[in-house]
Image (cartoon, rainbow, N blue to C red):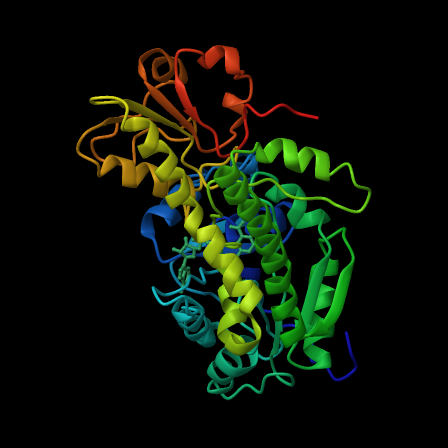
Length: 415
Ligand SMILES: NC(=O)c1ccc[n+]([C@@H]2O[C@H](COP(=O)([O-])OP(=O)(O)OC[C@H]3O[C@@H](n4cnc5c(N)ncnc54)[C@H](O)[C@@H]3O)[C@@H](O)[C@H]2O)c1
């Protein structure tokens, strides 16, 4: 703590108040509660609050249920409808894009407004949501300042972007390195001290805008590199070549590591965050914007392949394997697989069935959820959209009777 930093409030019943109990906020709240913090979790959805207070969870994340159950039973985690006074506030709300690919910061704004009445002198406010550069300083700080508490003097504001991998969140919340960028040096110091209290990875100190852009750069880097692989897949499809063989051989070069192509890029992060950089500097981001378009166009390429095969049959039965945006999770947000399945479901001259081991019911009317065995026994065309663990045993000889579209390369020969 710097000498000018006033002590954290002593009287709060809670150490941490987490706003937004989704894929980031709930695991973070549970981990903090497990290491001895008294945590209040806030969400707008009543059903989420009830589920958590009953010791259960509403998302799929390995081992999270046991952690939440234990923390709620021990009284260290409680879900509440509104922010309560706490030493630290973590904002973990969604940051989607609009239809025009512009940042939608309305959730961040409303969360910041909601926590103001719970602020006390000495409180720390950390924005964990992924945001465009300048959000902490230009959006959050003025809202906090309107309370009369001066950011950087009375209350401490920082951005600490979350970089967790869904499916491994509990490990990564603790083990990943963190970047902490404060509004001022005192804010950075306070936030770094908070994270060093439970994170085992290094905590890197910087400014708010650097922290904001660094997170975006990480995801744009992934997006651009996946776009390269996807563009190569498009080229190979046109030339009648096997993209998996080309990539396998190219990657024998000691300084080349081409990523895997697929049906597109999905999820809350990689398909969204590059647009935050593009919005901040539209003239300077032709590569980032082109990569987004290449990746966004991939579902249409997969659909074209499926339609080409379907045209050979009178009323084809088509099975889509996987709907999530990546393997081994239940998250359908921005999922290119779901995009492909929805477009197929809208076609009148085919019967669609879906195999998604992480769902209990079909998200698409008219397209039943079936088992893998049922799909393989009854479909004419199989479209492998996600390389879920449950599909990885499949080999070409299991699918001899079927026409197969395999944009994820599940059946491609491995090196
Ligand atoms: N999911 C990931 O793997 C991941 C990884 C790194 C960063 N992020 C970023 O973290 C942020 C949160 O993502 P997520 O995946 O946890 O989102 P999510 O949609 O799973 O959860 C967000 C939760 O916030 C709640 N909420 C919305 N407005 C609120 C408010 N004003 N007060 C309280 N609760 C509110 C929603 O009801 C929802 O339950 C986003 O900026 C995202 O880009 C996500």
